[in-house]
Amino acid sequence: MADKTKVVSEISKIVKPFTGTKGWPCKAWVFNFAHQCETFKLSEALRKQVFAACMQGDALRWYTSLQEEDKEDLDDIIDLLFERFVPPIAFQAELERVYQDLQQTQGQSVSELGRDHQLLISEMTETLSLAKQLKNFKRSLLPSIKSKLEIRTSADLNDMIEQAKLVRPTLSTNLLASTVKASRKGCYNQRTPLLYFSVSTKQTT
Image (cartoon, rainbow, N blue to C red; front, side, top):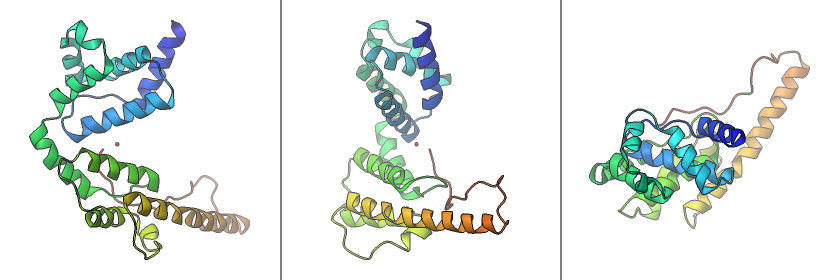
């Protein structure tokens, strides 16, 4: 029992609390929750415990108001969560805003950025054209990656994501080589971390 309690506590810290923010933040929290549950291969019982442990504020008040029979199946709980915190009409407008504002953030990999794009697109009721998907993804990349993308026609968004992922090893290798060279000259301060290729911030994942 003590081991299960520790597991729930530790994974709840990784998932982070959900306080009841409506719209996309709620969807994003559920995606992350599901991803962590899959990563740690949690049983259904543990998943429900982690879910409950992450509820805070308005979300906790909502959760405690549920009937016990509503808490028997995790999929049912998540459906009820979306009913409460993801208003359908306003949600689509919010999705579009979040999608347009996507920017690769400091330390965020191309894979993570691509996943954000694909998740948002999958939630939209209106199908986006391939041209718009590709244009918006390329726009949201770091300039240091975007400028090195091969100029060619991408078959789909996943194709462009894979193409962009190939750029990062070259950049990382150059950065590492510069760091080693500077350290040999005595110019590198070991207390200073390696710099990521930075970018503006974005709304919550």
